[in-house]
Length: 106
Image (cartoon, rainbow, N blue to C red; front, side, top):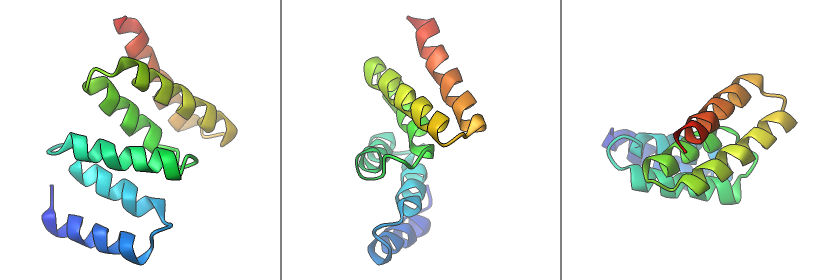
């Protein structure tokens, strides 16, 4: 986690509040050392920017890591539907693989 980068990203969010990339980048900065904080930012993205496809994989993985299997499945399924609409084959495959991991563990 890079505190300088975190402060910079927070400033970018203030300057460009409608750019979801800055929120996504900030969430990823928190991912390793503060996963709950990362999840809060990913949830903000899911709520306010539901078409930001990259969010679904990361949020789903965090839900799974926190033992919230149903939320993880729902998040991956929503992401799969969005990836199909956006015709994004690479992300579609990643989301399907992540969902299958959860289904295999049940």
